[in-house]
Length: 294
Image 1 (spheres, rainbow, N blue to C red):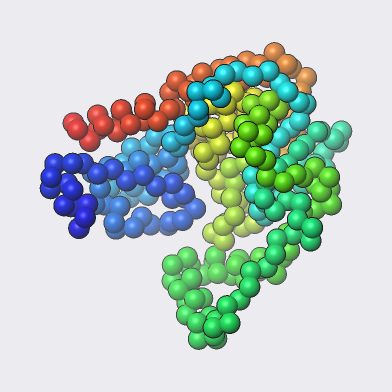
Image 2 (tube, rainbow, N blue to C red; image 1 turned 135 degrees about the vertical axis):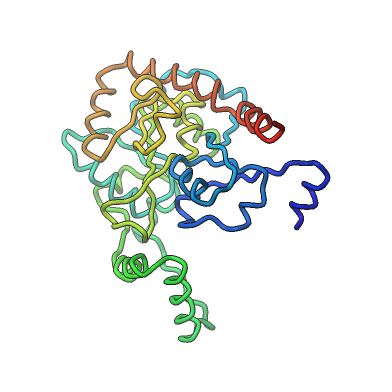
């Protein structure tokens, strides 16, 4: 009703939402109230097409301070990943770390080097009765389906602490300044687009392009990210950024880039130019304005 009142005054309303692919099997009815929907995930386009809601597929909104919009020289020889620990990242990076000869992998983020070598289990509230548990599980099945529920029961019994192979490569979350320096100054910055979900088998995860796919090139990274549908709509792959299919392909691409400093510099330059020139927020807002006005 609030949206309708605003629209009645002649002001169009645009909804931005990310994580469609992770959160929804069917779009909420509320999304149909908007004049348009800013949809960053290419894989979410089908959801809007099926629902019949107005939408426009544009990059994730990312703003980088002008002082970071410079092309920096390599400051270290690391293959750097920054992100919190989760099951899918553990599985991928462990397979990468097993490849020989070893690469200088460095992992930063929350949870990776916990003293107990794993995430702490969440505490069960004292008022979480059997009745509430049954209701929670019934709601989960109704909203998510029976197959995700079975996987939820199965995977809950699995433990995913940081493997010993990765322990020596992990670091705490970097400060803001260090974060920018690592992404821009590392020999190679990694992106991982797969994610945890009970809707997919653990060893066949789904993926979608994340904010890092815009941010890292904007900062001038030599960027190597996980391929997902629609990535070629954002970049000229192999010329602006590079993409890998699995751990083995990731290792091969890393070795190629390690041996080719000219290629690394070219990726940094062309990736930054594309991200800052085409995937910036003003460009997206101008496209949206033209769409809702006309």
